Length: 237
Image (cartoon, rainbow, N blue to C red):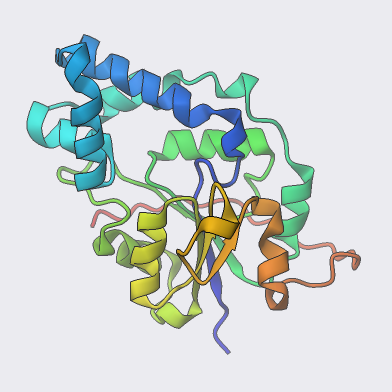
């Protein structure tokens, strides 16, 4: 019997949106537009929003239209975030991950350095079987919500049947794309009661066992599982 695979988004999903890291990231991106690219400050919001909505990442628009080096962007934006002061170990999340009867995979639009840093700070770097990230070393890289990105994640994780795939993500665009592929989806929404995206909706990552209890063992049952080190995708397509 094939083993299901559960894909986890990283930013604003594995850690809480209440940390406001997304706001800090937007500020860093805005500064990059102004200081590194030379976009007038008054035009940044409109251009940044357009690039995000069109390409899934502001960086893709910067790379396509401004010849920005993605690795330089990563250095100035993601790697410059003060995550060490914000993200704390989450023992409750670790316990939830260990009780999940699935192969576990991180699927992020971030570059690998940022994703691995987040996992380490949360204390869950050894709880996943692998990581699919956006490879900034590839020209015209793909990312969520592009279908090619989801197919790449499936290839990395060694799964062919979309009916075996689960995803939790805070982006409704990503959830909608995965659902069209046949994945079972959980939207981590700002307000789950108001979301009409995905098969299930939650407000907090810790609520996953409540909406998919069949994938979890009883939380009162203590089972020692062998830790799985995170492996990093080296796919180039």
